[in-house]
Amino acid sequence: MNSDEDEIRTLAHQIWESEGKQEGQADKHWEKATILVKGVSGADQMGVTRQPDPSEDLGSIETNAADQT
Image (cartoon, rainbow, N blue to C red; front, side, top):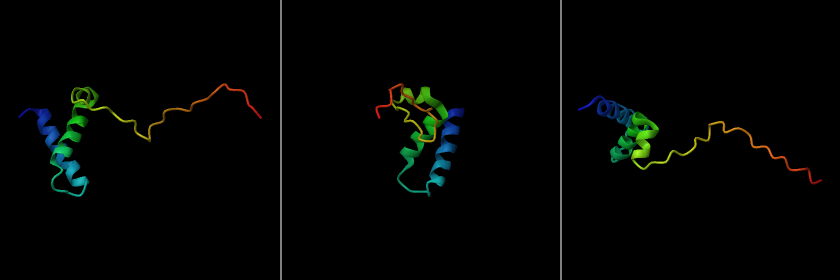
């Protein structure tokens, strides 16, 4: 077993605990942990697209349109 797999296993267990120790969710927890451990490049290899986090500041969008009042 390599160090990444150990880290994934530990993180998957922590995710399982944090989500209320629900049974039958091992694959979902393993996938989440894998993405977190391997980062974006690992997610790309798995065909996973990162969704924007609503808490991220994407900046404001300003338009130069004239006021039509």
